[in-house]
Length: 114
Length: 112
Image (tube, rainbow over all chains, first blue to last red; front, side):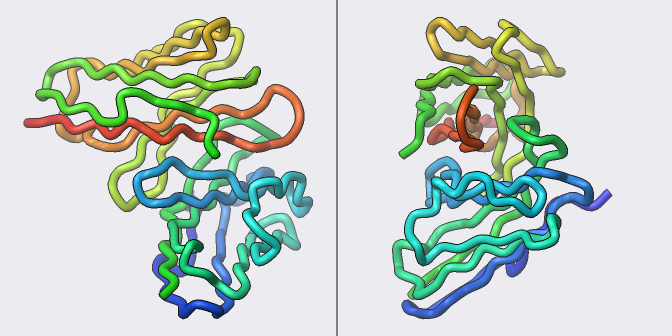
């Protein structure tokens, strides 16, 4: 079956612009994670959804970051008033069960803020 | 800030040699996972070891877990050029929250 997909794959934004990043998880997967990965670093947890409920948003770096998964499938990560430090790869992952099991990652969206 | 620490940060070996990577973590965990990431791509799950397990094998991969030392190791035997990638360990908390913590990774280069 299809894996996790993300769009766009690349996004260039001017500082101050709003961006929206989309994640299509594997069908039927309950859990969905968003991560931010800086160059040469490991992924940093941003937020977690169980179906449509956002149960952990402890990793969101500021109130400019907002995520939603309204119908428990597709998720959108929105960054308002982008800053240069937001430049990174944003990874989405889904897993079948409730928590802490194998995560299947999408290819990521590479965001560059100029 | 990331909880996991991995060493070495980078490793360069010849094809056919074994590669060992280590990971340390700070809190009690349910399980520990290892992932691989090829340059510019998403992460691929390699192996999961639960907190009540001490060793696990999958093909050329061998993972150990020492919960008393809060550490794990990943051994890749008979390495191939295609194993060239970054390798990350990841842990989730035993209680409270859903935050998966990744280490900074070990960059493995296997020379043909």
